[in-house]
Amino acid sequence: ATSLSFNISKDKFEALDNGVGMLKEDILKYFEEFGNSSKKENDLGEFGIGRGQIFAQGHTTWRTKSLVMRVDVKNAGLNYVLNEGEINYFNGTKIEVKLYNKVKFLDKKIERFIEWVKYVQDIDIIVNGNKINEILDFDYEDATGMVKVVENDAIHVYNRGIFVKEDKIGTGAIII
Image (cartoon, rainbow, N blue to C red; front, side, top):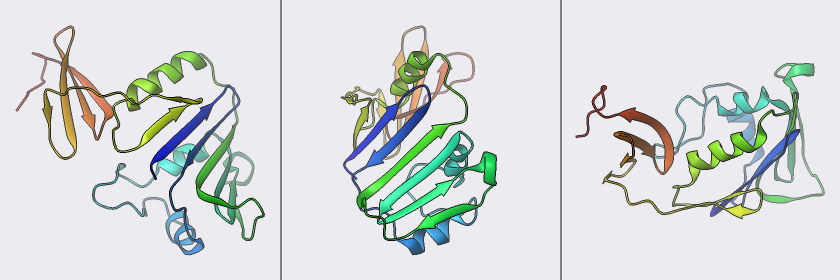
């Protein structure tokens, strides 16, 4: 994918990419068991449970190619419905979540989300219609990690442009 879009409101959110999508065999292989992931060595994520975190938020519909998968853990547990041959073909992957609970303090949460992902460089990140990617001159950078010394004697650590954590210099942070 070259673009990843997020549309976020108080009662739903969706994430869409313009990638190649998934095959039915991939869905059956990787969605049947948590911790089983299609990620390659350099992909983001660690434990293969991100989709479970999404499922917990609301009634979820995944669209990819001519496949549609629906998951509603609140009402049906981890059972899901997978339909083939849907009329609305989607080349990439589109995840729509109708939230179980309305989001409180939405503007602040969107602002925080943008802070987490705004330095991703490999793919355009679009939030509610606005491209948010920025270039940051990191103080240290290698293939996967970046470090930036910021105000208040702190360092920000990023993994491929995604904010990971902040440490205060002198309270356990070591810059190597």
